[in-house]
Image 1 (spheres, one colour):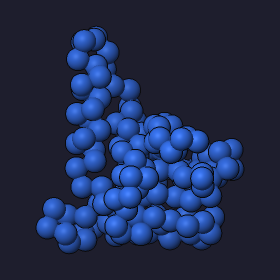
Image 2: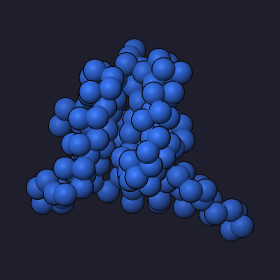
Image 3: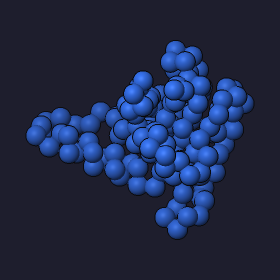
Length: 142
């Protein structure tokens, strides 16, 4: 099975997820988003360290199916990845992924009111949901 890196693009943080040997998408963490000058250094470290050979990126399509400003930002991000890595990239419709990630995290932490989600946990969870959708065959955009 290829080594997939799921990505939830953001200017503040980029959520990361990996597929294990069974094809289960797992949150990996985050790296600084594209507002930070060294995000590509961190991305190279992850890609090399994890032996990544394909990217799966959430693509923010509007609810009516149109492509807006945020999708154009993701297109620019993808262009940088292509230039740097020359690896296959798959786009996955990410409508409502962040909402689903937040709901999933709320459900997990209901019994522990003192625990607050750490910065980036939602981003990594969203990346794992994006990757899961791809692995489940719901890719559709490539």
